Picture 1 (cartoon, one colour):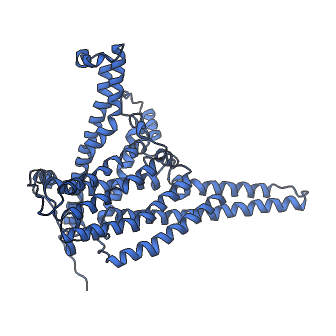
Picture 2: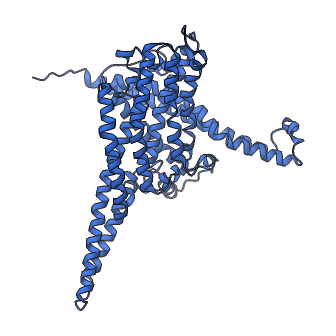
Picture 3: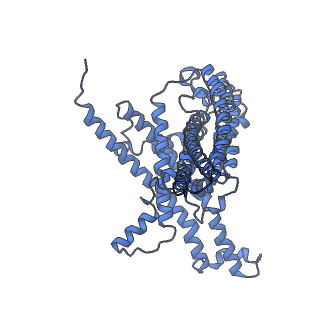
Length: 482
């Protein structure tokens, strides 16, 4: 027997509309603020300095270190340009974290047919802003018996890698924009991996310094979990780098441009390449003259068989890369303590885990870092597996599409600094892909139960690590066959 609820469908439609409106408004605020800050620091102020609009007296004190005032103007304008990535991250992280908290609460309410926060501001639009103000003005309590220095440093050590680990990704997600090319380093992905190993130190430090048994258990769980799942995480990333042939995040993203069939998760263009080889081999065999020798025919059939082997290897490579994407997503959730891997802060067992004794701004820093880490791992997945800022359909919503649209309608658009089709549409597709992964992580949280500690360790050591090693070896051989 089935039951129907006539109020459920209109309720869901209304909540979906509210959630969509909330997301559009917050994303407009976030990236509008980031664009304004980057434009001011990276374009406007250097332009004013280079053209003498800023009074020279403001930097007269420094002029004695230079023979020419123009040299000082050049130094100052370049300094502001170099500060652009830092300003972008500093503006983006707090606003984005507030949005992600509200997004998670509203999305979970939507998945469980509830309303979620809807009191502060229109439809709860300002709820997390109010929560942030509350945490900032809340009393900061240090428990008796705690190590004050370690207790204070732990949130900073936990939060700092979220900032510095995000910097190299700026070049990849902005199509290597000139203002962010300074942070594009040749071994960018290894830098990100190295930085991502630091937060667990902050968790263990804060747990031990709290002088609380529940916090200590949560910290030890976090250390064991990080050691277990960081190995397959790194192996999955190394395998993708092996396919791409580079450790540069910008190069990895650029080699996936051109639509679905050229993405790394679709074998990096191996299928079209293998199909082209097979077609050419069959065409050569078909056009052979009847008078050719038997040895030439055998060579032709050997070429066809080799092309068929390359095609099979290409499809096998696709399967390996889909599996690698699943391994990365699983291990990333474990690294940032997301459900079903939230044992370090299991509320039903450890009150709140490693951050039980934290309050006020220290707790806010832990909270901020957790959601920033979710955004960072989603950005890494977008760059490594989902094509970065490239369009999934070549010629749709990208620079070529924009140029075609302008030529058809004969639009005369002004050339605005810091706004160009490559940057705009690259940022658009990065936003779509990254926040789609964030929504998927929220859906997993609302769907799956928590692992037991023995299940978590067995799954990491007995399944994910052997599987990632097998895939690394398989990709090494398949790459040569393709």
